[in-house]
Length: 105
Image 1 (cartoon, one colour):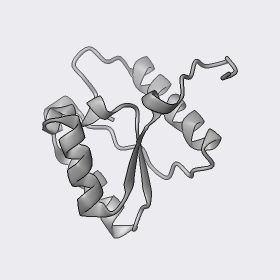
Image 2 (cartoon, helix red, strand yellow):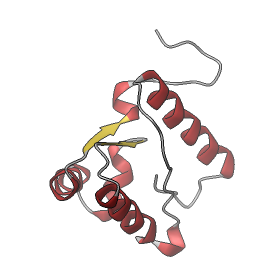
Image 3 (spheres, helix red, strand yellow):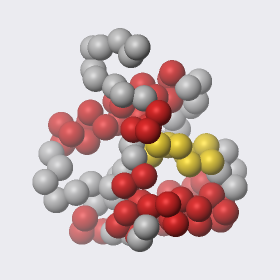
């Protein structure tokens, strides 16, 4: 996930919860969450890319494709990432709406 300038810790926590919820509902294992900090960009992306390649990860989950936007066109970066790693990129925002404490219909 890419942290933005006005993002508070509570929003980071809610986003992690949303990713955990999506992974659980999709029968996926959420092994790690990489958070791109503004002041260290693109360090987390580089660690994320290397971890996916090294661990032969098959599926990666983003809160939304906009989290790739800092690197360029989100769809272009998604295509590059999938080609470079062989992993499928899923966007939790596009697939499920989640609110803590609410059932999804």
